[in-house]
Image (cartoon, rainbow, N blue to C red; front, side, top):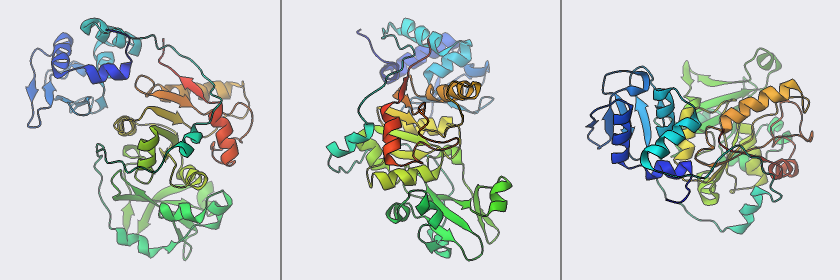
Length: 363
C-alpha cells in the first residue's frame, strides 16, 4: 500500500480491524448495541466492564466508566499502552501493514491569502448531515426582551450592523449596559445566551462575559460542547473546506463584516479547545483548520512568547494528525498584547494569515 495519512488510516479501519485491535489491547470478546455500534471491555483504564463503546459512524470511542471521555483510535492506544502518539501510530500501522509518509513538525509560509478563495466560488447550498451535540433548548421569545441592534462599542471595534443582525446581537441598555449574544447549535437551535458586560466595575471584577440571568432563570449552556458561529457559518465552512478558530464571539462578527456571508470563522469562547469541539470540527469533512487565538505575549523571543507558543502548539496537535493545521502568529508586531488577529482590520488579518505556520505531528 502506498503512503497514506493518519486521517485516511482512521477511515480505512474496518469494524473487523477495530475488533482485532481491541483483542490485542485486552478485550477478548465484544458486544453490539441496537445501532450496531461495538462495545468492548474498558481497556482504556484497565477495567473489566463492557462499557467502552465504538461509534461506527463517527469512528470515536466513548468510555462510560472511569474515563468518562471520548477519544479516537490513536488516543485509545496511547491510553492503553501508555505510549506517545507517534508510537501509537507505528503500532497500528504495523498491526495492519499500513505504510504512511513521515509527518514530522514543519513550518510553511504561504504567500497567498487563504481568504482569497472566497472570490473563486459561487454560492452553493450544502446538505451534508453533521453529527449533533445535544443541548437544552430555550424559547426564542426571550430575545424580544432586548433591543435589536449593535452596541456602539462593537461598531467602534469594526463590526457592522449587517453582521450584528445575522448573528442576532441585541442590546440591554434599559437597566444594564451590556451586549446580548445568542448562541446556537449546529442546527440553529437557541442553546444559550451570553452577555458582554460593558460596565467598568463588572469588567474589573472579572465578569466580562457571563450567562444571561433573567427572571430568576439562567440561560447557560456547555460552551465547550459547541462552537459559536457554527450554525451561521456552516455553509461557508463546508464550501471552502476550512475553519478558523478564534477565542471570542467578537472576532467571528468582525470576520463576518470583512467577508459578508463568506466567513468560515467560529469561536471556542475560551482559550482552550475541548474534545467535543474537536469532534464537531472533524465531523464536518473539511481539510484545513486555523487557530487564531489572542496574542498572549508582549515581546517576540521572550520567555512569555515561548511558553505561549508551546500551549498553542499542543492545541494545534489535536488536529494535525487528521487535518492540515495552521497557527496564526504575530511575529511582526502588527497587533497588540491580548488582541485577536482580527482586531486591527481585514488587511492585518490577511497579512497574519499569509504568514501562518503549519503544524505537523510530533516526531
